[in-house]
Each structure stands twice: as C-alpha cells, then as structure tokens.
Length: 322
Image (cartoon, rainbow, N blue to C red):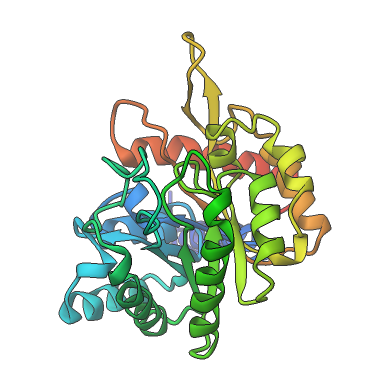
C-alpha cells in the first residue's frame, strides 16, 4: 500500500532527480570556456521558437542575430526591435554580435564582381557603396540596443584581381573600424568565400594590412574550405594572428560524389572541429563559437541545425571545451 508519506518521498525524489539533471545540463554550458551559441535564423525565422530551442532544448546562453521574422535586422521596425529584446530576455540569452551585411557590395571603380549577382545577403536589401555608412551606423545602433559590442562585416564582393584595389579597401576597413571604435563597437571581419578575404591565409594578409586593433576576425574555416583552402585547419589557421580572432562561425564542408564542395554537418568534413576547438582553447580564446548550420538535411532548418548541433557538441566535448 502506498501511503501519503511514501508518495511525498517519491515526488521529492523525482523532483530532486529532475533538478539534478537540469543542473547538470546547465553546468556543461556554463563550464565552457567559449560563448557557445547559434545564429537564430539557422533554426527558425520565428525568434521566440529559435530562442526556445537554443535555451531550453540545447541549454545554451548565446545567440547571434541576423534575420528575425523573415527580415534582416537592417529593416526591422523599432517595435520589432523591442519585441526581439523581450524574447531574448525571456529566455535569458545574450547576443554575441550583430551579423550585419556591411560591405557586401561591389568595390567602386573595380569590375563588377561575378559574386554580386544573387549573392547571399540573408534578407538584407541590396545596397550601394554609398549606403554603407548608413549600414554601419544602423549596425552600431543595433549592437547597442542588443547589448553587444561586436558587429560582423565583410570586405566587398570578390574580385578576380583584388591587388590594384587592396590598399584602398584596407583604408575603408580602417576608417569603418575607427568609426565603430569611437562608439564602443568592435568590427569582426568574416572570411567569406564570395568576398575578397575568403581564406585563413587571405585573412592573415588583410589583418596585416589593416593595423587598427578595432578590426578583428570572425574566423570561419568552413568558408575557407568553400573557397578552396582545404587545409583551413591547420594551414589557414596558422596564417592568422591569434590575438585578433574575436568571433568564430562553426560549420563544415565536404566534396560530394561529383567533386563539388558542399556544406555538411559540423562533425563531418574537412574541418576537424575537435582539433580546432582545442587550438582555440590553447590560445585562451573566450569569445563566441556560433553554429551557422548552412547544411540542409532536406527536412527543415531546425532539423538540420539539431543534427549539426549534436556534432558540434560532440566535438566540443572531445576538445574538453564543455
């Protein structure tokens, strides 16, 4: 016979076990030396649902913002900004950076880039070079409103021969970095396969040409592989000044049966992410490592991201980074 006393003991025991499990889940997230997060729209355009998955299902604390409710942050209203802030606070998340489209435009005076036509702007409207100062100021404003000190940028659609324009591009990056610095914001340049800095080796050269410490790197070895740098880790990694890496995107790529390089889950592909995470730990890196799924499993963005997160989590654990 089950007495009320034994029932209470059972319920207390069950509650205690649940609390212990929740504490264990939270502890590995808290113990990470990195700010482990996800770009929200890689899960869902519904920000509330994406944040629920990140915080409640995956037990993470960080989110990167790019698109919400089907719109790039560049075009959302003040009311939508306020709503987004409420959602993020509701789930106890912190924003790693504003994933802006800054400088994803053609360089003036150069031949139009073949990458510009149909280039991925993640919901942002195509803009001109002259509008980039506005994009920068909007991005800085967004960073302040979402309590982050980082804005992601690029270095213009890729040219077949960037050499004649490289010094001028570096000067523009320097000016933008200094504008951001004066407002307490750090620019993180993403190595993007469709832009002029696409690989680790190119990132090393660009950072050598832009001495402003307010231009840092958003290291994306997956993008480097897509650009053809198949040894992005460790080859491309070795070319980068480690003290200027302030953000990291996590994804992977493989060659398909035709020899074409295509996106893949994080734990499958050219990048040994466990080794990359160990290398980041060794340099004392403590900034964002953010899942940017890109790979599609044919079901849904959430399903694809879930599969990639499981691979990323496994590699973080292998590296002792959780």
